[in-house]
Length: 232
Image 1 (spheres, helix red, strand yellow):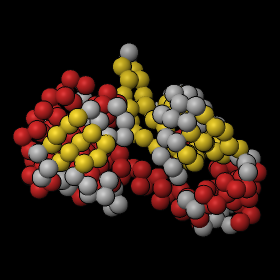
Image 2 (cartoon, rainbow, N blue to C red):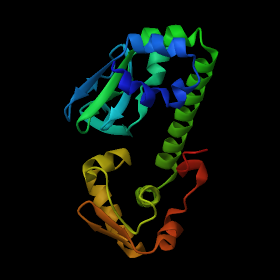
Image 3 (cartoon, one colour):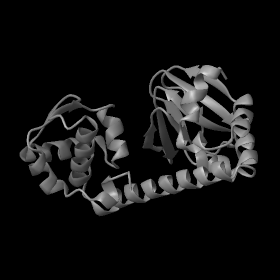
């Protein structure tokens, strides 16, 4: 791996406090690859040979069963996937593919496990990271089980508006078919949900969204920090 990539990886919470010697040992076995869009990086059921770090681009984590497929989450720089499989030395429970041209670092899972046993700060960081992922899964499950499709979409749009700096207008980051999958809907249900939010100040033009009255949308969305705030 080029040493020019070290600072970005070292800056991740996961690697920040580990010893220099252990970080250097991890990087000795790691390498970086550039991937074009729509390349499958890992397949569900495969052994977890590497911990992946997205340095640029974006990656779709997805799963398929009985002829159906769903998107689980999107990984953007700088972030790892899939840590639990690496630590557990178990098969991947999701597949992953690039959504755009992406630069990915691959760190051998056996090296991660070996240093986990030796570096207490690294081990604590891994436990913290897994705890954050677990809480994110709980929040996503609550969102899916407790809310209607319109409420899920309304809260998603509110979160995206916040990430866009609070601007009344912003663009969706990916196609609507994939958004429907992320929100646990069919494309047809997503279209109906968008139409239903029209009366609450939401305008849609292709991938361009306008929220004319955030307070009005919040009244139907009823956002909860225990579902929507991923900082807690």
